[in-house]
Length: 595
Image (tube, rainbow, N blue to C red; front, side, top):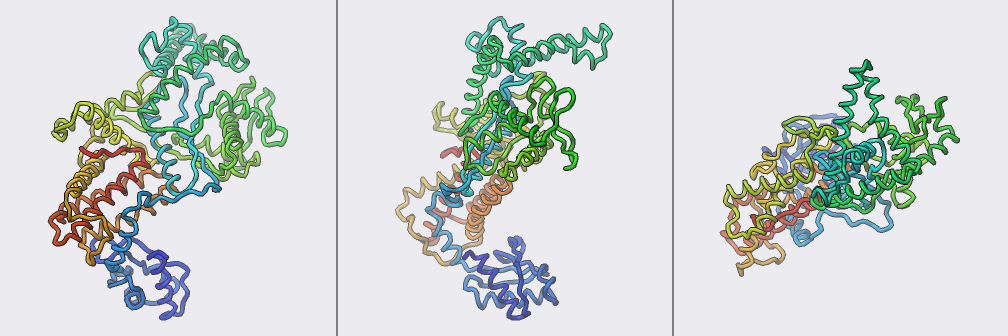
């Protein structure tokens, strides 16, 4: 039984004894820093059942706890809050139980458990990954790792959007203007080369619109009648019909893009267990559209298009197949979800990491899958996140104003190098070691800056601010970890430092606070998994680091009064370092041994 469970039971016993009332629950919170105590019982909710003064009730319950719970040494009551002080031996025993546990905070999964599939990245094969994809990948990867740490079996996946009009736009522009250039002939990554032709299409499309407007068409008419757009639409129809030349070009250009994506994912430090391609799953989606027509889930309009009427659910009508028979995104997403369950029968829920501009799409998708009769559809979750802005404004792929992911990663490493050189922290490093460290710091800064923010919130990303070595940043936490490793290297040369069971009896305030912070780690992982929020892990780690730095500045480690105290402080430092490394690992962030 945990301490909180013990206290909850004993508070209920006190209320039965003195007030003859059975409480259903006892509400706890962390004791505010200005008051003595380690855990607080909130008295106010009890007033619904107990008639009386909250201060008097707190005094009565507090006295009972001191008399009946060996872990409770004292209490104080502030208004309706009963602040409980816990004996040092409880925290020392806890520390001894976890100090050597490499997987502290993690729950082991059971092979027979149901699995969760987490989808992220899901790029289009008409452009390279950009800053928006970076947030998507970092969120999806870390949420998958957090859910895994909480004890669930997890599959990481992506759906590659490799078909559709946007893909045909890049293909057509390359065919018209590319002069057979390739990644090899240009020296460009394949995804960048193809992305250039997506921009080229938009430039030519706009020129044609201007000409058509000059000829007397309205802007709306011109947008629909532009010859290059009509040719792209024709290319899509040919692709769906299996035209040999179109399919060959599609395979060739997508191959370039996949090679580029693989390099970007490696640079970013994310991976996948399985991949899905829209060009395969949209066909299964079409099959289930046909099934849904038979069962009455969908209806066919006079023009041949197929719709799902969701007006009774407070939504509107949603198209699932166009009049010309071609699929829409919804068709593909229906097929993808069904295919995943066929491939992984142990999957009982999915997390879709997609920006908040798609909130309505996923609301509709989940509802359609429920209407089609899939029981697992009740366990689908849209990890909706806010956009990433830059000080210069919003990014637009078709206009070529995006921040390329590879360029951003390289720029972060370069900035980390410049700042590190200014601070003079790298004496004795070889050039190769420096470059590796710059990459770890730069990527850590980028990842932490993005992940510390609640996923639902929009981010204004400032690269320079993210690499600050002070404050709530990745480099600040990495530097603290490196400082701890330095302490441990010093301790390795001190014969009076042991890793034996801690045998002290009294904790200083800074030591106690640090042990209490360590205690929270398993609960933080659980809550982060429940809320799909890496921000909880990130900000917990920052609080842990602040606690360690306060301990380090106020308590002498190697100048301790006894060898037992010295050994404890070294071991406490080691455990904090292990926890920083553990927390950062599930955020996908590396920690350097030296900085």
